[in-house]
Length: 448
Image (tube, rainbow, N blue to C red; front, side, top):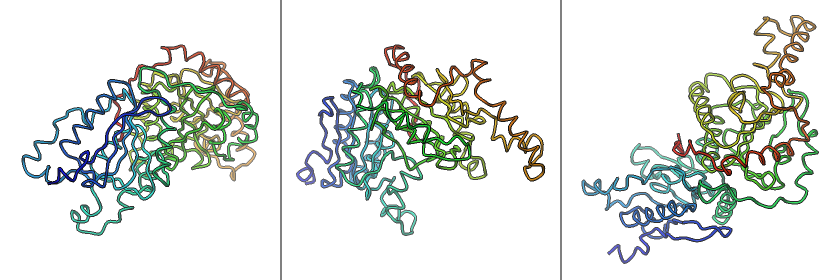
């Protein structure tokens, strides 16, 4: 009876093109049995996924589903259906996966989104392990759908969503734009685009954007826009871990990934969410041959009880572990502050291929004022003249010139030369491995 009422068994699959390049698509039809998962439509998804992987084309998953089809899953026979595809939830990142959350997403739509490299969510959609109705029955209390799995939860708290839009059409446009930065598969570099006119002009404004004083803040997105080709910035997870910006973009037509501290939020100090965000981005870039640019201005990790409860040390070391395995070019530029252990996480030492600094860079172990208090037990109100003298001494010791003299900093550049410097360096490194990395992070978990 259900067979006659379930066209395509609720999953529409096929192949097409985006910007002239082939893609594979799996789309859920919620009007058919709630797009619930069954044995037959599972075979369809497996086939399309395998063809996409073997043929080297991105997989696009358009999510809106009610979870498992209950009659198929009941009893021992239903259990025997599960787990027959041992690679169903394997991600080796040979091809990009992108997911759109376009309605109620439970079961397979949730699982595939959490396995994807990029997730866009429409406002009003929901993603959770189970629906609020099932959850209410399980825990015997009222559950709000938005609170359970709405866009604010996943874009601001869990970080499982990379972009939020208002309409389905906008979601498709965002997917197209994201895929424009990536190769079709991991054995070729990303496509190179033409450089928009006047892309070299914005960098001349950079001295007006970044204050000389470490105590003054700015929005690092303005710096990134000056450095990248005009209108090419594509930010991921903008509402999550906001003291760190991760974005794709183009430099001289080449795709790059940018990791930048943002002093506008928490002074640029790095919290556990920002750590997870950075690690996820490193994995994306290394898996798909995207060089990484660090723009550094950070006072260290945000310390405190809340961060420790959320596993800050583990998040910090996850980041370092991933960074140590990155095989694409890593270029680090220090703008102002670069303190503590976070110096290493942001590409310091042997954790980058090229390191440059602005003359305003400060490589202290910590903020000079804090350092005076820790080292000498002195506060400004105790002896203002002595305090300022010691602060000046510590600041001088942490200037970029001495680090450059030890060849730990390869060059010191005028801020207005930042874009040209990166263009030249990336051109040199594009010769390495024909622009293809070794993908040591291809098996890294997508969600953790």
